[in-house]
Structure formats: structure tokens, C-alpha cells
Figure 1: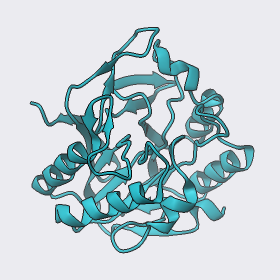
Figure 2: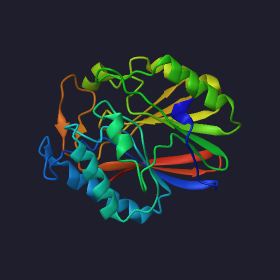
Figure 3: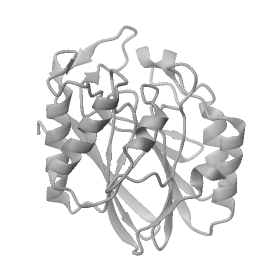
Figure 4: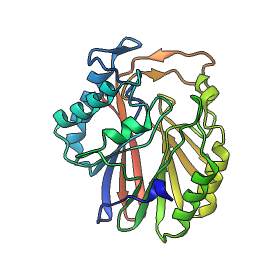
Length: 257
């Protein structure tokens, strides 16, 4: 279970997590993704997090657009300049290079994928496949089930790809074995919710009683329920997840509001 071997303990029952995702940075800090300066938008989000007494940040994948080392270095630089002092964790997206994610993981940025409060577990999953679509390998699914089985705590989980169809263009790049992952989580009995990115907008669905939440991007958003690819500059957004014991509350924060 190497993916989950490194554990981060928050050592308290109440924490606040920020879920940020899909920054699509470039090597050039002035780089634009569909006419949006993604570095500037991410910087605004990171700076706003200081207002919320965040205990940890989970980055939900697609850090980079151009797959460059410099884009990962830019992320680290923006994090340092933001003044945040909490740990930052990550899951890989289809645009990401895992060796580069691991290479930037120092200081506040952690490679831990198994996070624990006093009463709740947080699992960070690998949904990166060989194509832009997602895939959870059979061994990874077995490891997820084993980690959940050996703990008495309830849990929440994070991955990049969406496991349920959103009736939109990005369904061509869905987590291809999403139901298998969801059944793995539900069959464990104590998983409360799965959070993901990838779809560049806010969604909420359920699967066998499991809540499934999509978090909007810090970059551009994609129009909902359309068959073609339509971009919307709605400003950056992120998701707040407040955990108290074995319960949670979540809301999306739009910087434009």
C-alpha cells in the first residue's frame, strides 16, 4: 500500500480544508488559458484562504497546462508568496506529471495521501490514466479497500476525475471505471463523500447514498450540460470543507461574489 504509506495527522477533531483544483499554470506567469491569466487567479484564491483559518489545502489536479517544470515551480512560488502556513497536499490530474509533483513536494507541500483527524480519515486517490480519461488500477482499488477496512473512523476521499456522468462534453474524459471506485468506497461502509475536480464547475450527485461533489476550477469554468466545449470566465472558485468529528459541511466559495 505504498500510495498510502505516508500519513499526516492533524491531531484534532475539528479542521477546515480547502479544495482547490485545475489551475492549468504555464511556465510563463503571464500565460493565458482561454484568455484567463491562470497564475493571477490562483494567486487570488491562495491569498483568500488566509481569511478562513485553513488547516490544510488539497490540490485536486491539473496544476499545469504546458507540463513544464517551470509551471510547478510557479505553483510553489505562488504558495510561498501567499503567506499560507498550512500543509498542502495533492492528487494527480490528467495534465500532471507525477515525478514533477513529487519533485515540488517540500516545505509546506506534502506527498502524504492518508490524512487523519482524531475521528475521520481523508484518502487522496490516484485516478490518472494513460489518456485524458481517468482510471483507478485494480491494485489501487485493493489498497483503498484495505486502508478503509483497517480503520474504525469514517472517511472522505478526493480524486481528480469525475466518476459519474455530468451530461456534458467532459464525459468523454470521465473516470472510466468510476462505478468500480464508488462501489469500493460504498462497500467499505464508512465513507461519507468523494470530492473531485476535472469538470471545471460545481456539481453534486449521489451514488448508493455516497455524496459526490465537484469543485470549480481556480482557472476557467466549463458550461454545464452542453455537448460541445464552452468556456466561461466566472472567476476562480474553491471549496471549503469543515470537519467536526465524524461530520462535515461543505460550500463553494466564488471570488466574484
